[in-house]
Image 1 (cartoon, rainbow, N blue to C red):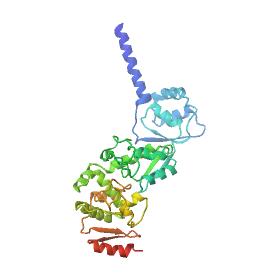
Image 2 (image 1 turned 45 degrees about the horizontal axis):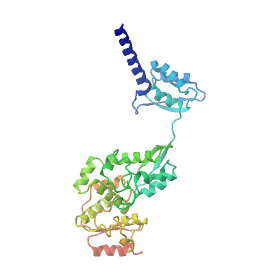
Image 3 (image 1 turned 120 degrees about the horizontal axis):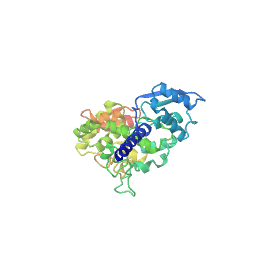
Image 4 (image 1 turned 60 degrees about the horizontal axis):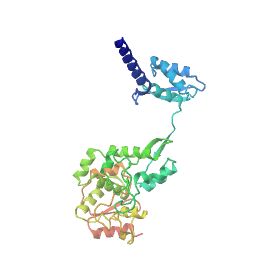
Length: 346
C-alpha cells in the first residue's frame, strides 16, 4: 500500500511539473514568430481554434489555455488586429499575447558626437521615463569624482564588459554607443542605457582591445581618443591621420592642444578657442595638460572607433579644421601658424 501511495505521489509530482512546464516555463525560439489576425468581435473559442489549426498551440494545451484565461479574466480582453506569438512558448505567453495589444514602439536616434548633456535633453524631449535623472545613472559629465562632491553611480558596472575598463571617478561619457534604437513607448532611462551599453560591448570586443593595446592605449584612452577625433574631424582617413598625430604627440609628452576638449569644459563649439579658454584649469584642457584628458568628451561613432584601432601613419604634427570642415595638416609649427592665418583668421 505504501509503495502504491508513493508511486501515486511521484506520478502527481511529475504531472504537476509537466503542467507547470507547459503553463509557465516552456520557452520558444524568439526568432520563430507567427502572426495571426484577430478580427473585432472575435470570441476566445474562435481564437483558440485558430491557434490549434495553425500549430501555434498544441491541441493538448487547449484546455489549459481555456482554464488560464478564465482564471485570469482574460477571455473577454482579446486584442484585435495583427498579433505576434512566439512558436513553442508557454500557455501563459500565448494567453498574454492574444489578450493584450502589442506594446507601442518608438525609435530613438542618438546622434554621433553628442555628449551626456545632449542625450539628457533629447531623452527628456522624447518623454523617456526618468530621463531628467539621467546623471543619477551615468554620473555627472566632466566631473572628477576624486575631487568633486558625491560619487559616480555604480549602476550596471558589473553587467557590461566595457564598464569594467572605466575608471571609477568618471561618468559614462563616451561609453554609450550612438545609434537608432527601437524602444517600447513606456521604456525607462535605464532601458535605454542598457541597450546603448550592450551596443558598445558589441564593438569593444577582444579584437578591438588588442588593437588598442598594440597602439599603446587602454580601453578608456581609446574611447577618449575616438571621442576627440569624432568632434575634431570628418571622414575615416582624416580621423586615422589625426589619431596617429595625437599618439605621436603623446609619445613625446606634447600637449594634444585640441579645441574640442576645451569646448567640452566651456560648453562652446569654437573652431579656435580663446587665449583665456586655453588657461582654464581642467584636466580636459589639453592645452594646459599634456597627454590624454580625464576621459571621453562625446559618444563616438563606429567610424571613429575604427580609426582608433587603425591609425594612418604620417609625418605631420599639427592639424586644424576650417569652418567648412576641411582639415589642413602641417609638419612644423610655422606651417601650422600659416594655416591658422589662412583658414581661421576670419
